[in-house]
Length: 208
Image 1 (cartoon, rainbow, N blue to C red):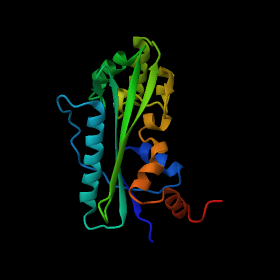
Image 2: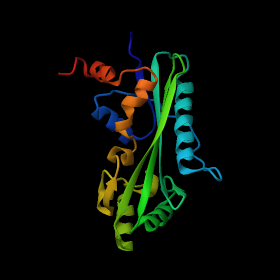
Image 3: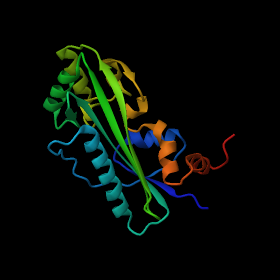
């Protein structure tokens, strides 16, 4: 049986790097999806809807290209029921980081897999709790000036300078980065694809 190719429906370099860290070489297809909020939509429903929309959008861009597994994901930060996506500008980043300081928030990442040959799909939402320091306004301004959080949910990246804003996490670290690697084996199994075999193929030889 020929293993499918892996397509990543994302503009996030972090997700591509996480997959590459596993030895998976994904083809990047940029999905054209409007990431708009919907009234009365729960954070997990919001993330799952966008992950599925990204996956389908990438699949449409592939056209008649069988034999692929498309992976789409969406990450949101949520606190007090509010959804914090990517900041629109520096003022929006200031609002978000002020809201998060000295408290605990949740990071939700929805992941969706879709096979282009038989339409099998699988999806899940992973949750991680993140505890933030009681940093001051000067720290917020300094962090925003680095530009690191410009394209990230909640206006920060835990894998970089954003780690200095945190006290700790409960759950998956890669989930906060943008792709919870721990849930991938089960998701791939749901679409009848052996993840380890894909890793071995992309590595060019069987793993030791």
